[in-house]
Length: 163
Image (cartoon, rainbow, N blue to C red; front, side, top):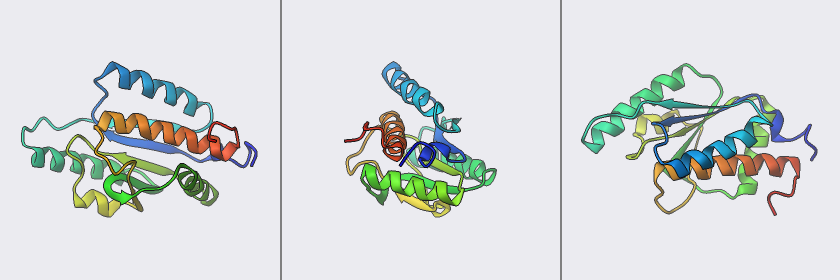
């Protein structure tokens, strides 16, 4: 597959997430992958404010409502990163993104806050998937997701990054 056929020509990809990055190591890693991604596709990160509520359930509800409101303003398909979702290999992830590109779909990925998402957000998803069976801090999830998105693009290009 050459670059003209690869994921790099996808319409638009958005990562919709809760909160901003607070740890310098996470900011540095994300900036690295964002820089790589922006060379190949229309990509943006939309950070919604984290809840200031003290109770985890209230945080989850407030943040989930913000996500739903943001999703209502977007078109395309929605992939929610969630612990209840299906795991997939990097190769399968690349293939799924290629199919979305072939259909001309804009794709919005959703990454919740520290306490996750509610069922209302899950119901908005065209696909639920998880990065790992292990629990990861949400800032690390963002780093891992961005690396996997970059890896999927490189698989689509046949670059050799994934071997």
